[in-house]
Structure formats: C-alpha cells, structure tokens
Image: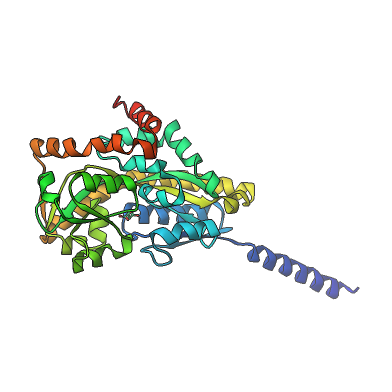
Length: 331
Ligand code: LMR
C-alpha cells in the first residue's frame, strides 16, 4: 500500500468512526403540558441547557411544551412505551398509572407552605414514594414545585356554599374529586390542554390551579372570580423511562444527574416568584376579581375540607398520610 493510499484509508476510518459517534448521539424527548414561561417550562429548559453542556453535546434534549406531543394521560403511556424519555407530570396524575400514593400531595391543607413541603420531598418519605414508580418501568429523578392553588369561577367563591352545583375541572386525582365533592361541587376530570376551552364554553364553571398555570393558559380571561385560597399544593415528579436511563453509559448518566440536581434547585428557586408575578399580571389585566380570604372563611373551608384526609386514607394509606404529617411536623 503506498503512502497516499494508507493515509486516505486512515482518513476514511477516522471519518467512519466520527460518523459512528454522531449516529450514537443520545436524544431525550422531554414532553410536558404547560407553557414554556412557567416554573416547569423554565425548569425543563434549564435541564436542557445543563444536560447538553455537561455531556458536551453527547446528549440532545428536545423540550416539547404545551401538550404539543401528548396530553395528560397519553404522556405517561408514551413514556412507558419509550416514545418520549422524560416527563414532569403533576403529582395529581399518577393514579391512573396505579400509583395513587402521590395523591397525598393533593390533600387539602396538608402543607402550610413550601418549607413543610420540602421536608417531605427532600426526605425519606419523598424518596420512598418515587421508588414506587420502578415497578411501572419508571425512574423518579426529582420533585419540582409549581405552587399553591387558587380557586376560580364566574361567581364569587367565599364560602363552601358558593360551590354548590358548580362544575369544577380537576386533574385525575381521586383526592381532588373528594375535595370538590366535599365543597358540594361537581368534579370533572379534564386534560389540562382542554381547560381554557372548557371554561370558555361553559362545559365547566371553574377550576383550581396555581396562578402561573392560570395566567399562561389565559384562564383569567374566562374566569370573573378567584379566591386566593392556597388550599392545596401542585407540584411535579420528574420521571424517565427506566430502561432508557439504566441503558445510558455511566459517565453520561452521572452528567445528567448533575444537570437534573442543578435544574431542580433552579426550578424550585423560581417557582414562588413566578406565581407571584403571574398573580400580579392577572390583577393588572383586570378581568378577574381576586378575593383575599378572611379568617372566618378559611375556617369554614377547613371544616369541610379537612375530613377529606380521613376519607382518602383507604386509598392513599393512613400510614403514608401519618408519615407525611410527621415529616412536616403537623402531628
Ligand atoms: C393541571 O392539569 O392542572 C396541571 O397538572 C398542569 C401542570 O402540569 O402544571
């Protein structure tokens, strides 16, 4: 073989190897249902930025917001089938998957604020709950916050009586169903992507969500009243397809874990402020009247909503509810 031929061959081999390495680029499709300009949307973008940086481009993260790829229920199926690799569904949406434990996060007034919540999500109880996903072919990586929910409708919602007969959109959680029943409302499960239209056309009268979701879906344009009730929490479990995650080269997985840990600190660091900004923007828009609750009103809501904890013990587990309360210091 002459000098030129062997040099050419070496170049071809090098090119071939190069092409092989490119062909092995890893893609993570991260699908979610909310707007990019929300705590979850921004957290997903932060993860993409850090994951691509730490893996030096070996991993490409494609974020699909706003139910572009899948709606609530389909996205979990898509993850199990491997059509997408990463999601961050609300903790209220794991019941249909056969893991109702996460519905404990939906119990009205179970957390008095982010600090109490963090004791659960950062502690052993939170870790054990994520581990329950393994049987379903899912690995739980982190908890991300949205925030505390407010109630909205086209009529004032001051006392529980104001809910009588109202059709209220909920996520798929049985705890949320019990919550709305306790208030005398008619709960209706509806995918997040359909809520704006549902409210606009009157298929449902009202709903509950943190301000960031309400604002970015323009729900305030079709809801005349909202009560700043903070009666329950909405947050997320960031999850991946387990086979995909376990099949990653170890160094890459480590880099992605680092990216996830940092994206989690970021997402949880901005959530409260994002919600405050969204609330202010809705107040400025002037289409919704926001009601601050009096102590008497709060007491009346608690009286009808706290019994939901006991009602739901058979579904979620009295032990788990007790563990959560012990972790928060409530009992
Ligand atoms: C909802 O369906 O109301 C929320 O779970 C949407 C979300 O992901 O924040």
